[in-house]
Image (tube, rainbow, N blue to C red):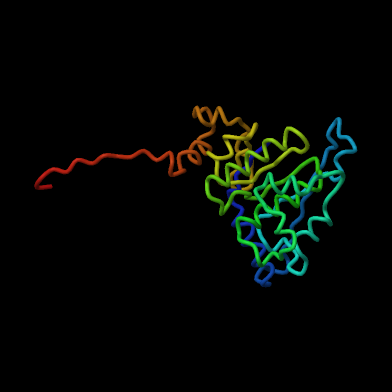
Length: 218
């Protein structure tokens, strides 16, 4: 499992929003490439190369039930009802429409939709955003278990302390560039780039409480 913080993501999304509103100059031109190297030992059990776990409910079709949408993506011999139980979901959601589900359940449905595709690589975009700590840990635990059985995970997240409990490697990015590639243990011990240390210390759980003494007359 790998992790990459999404620093600068809002800026990029804002650019797309401006593009949608026709606020960017017409002369602006952007291009890029994504290179996929076929992993060695990739067998036929992986029907697709990659799947995305989106963070938005808008990724779901509002006109289809959850069950209908999952069937469209299910590959191979995936046991859908068993996977739903692993995600803490009831089979009753299969007959529900996206607007009838809470944000937390939608998050897990989006995860289920990616896992049933049996992809070699699963990209999870802020999968724990909006979840309480217990559900976030449960979801990350599932990712860890799934990564040992079927797929590799690339997790994009701001929650560095959480992902450091589960991932094997960490890619830290700043302003669209990779600052360093490291491991959770090196980050926890402080053996990392100064920017990575700042990300780690910025989490409220790592703030150090300071005691102030009050003197009379001051």
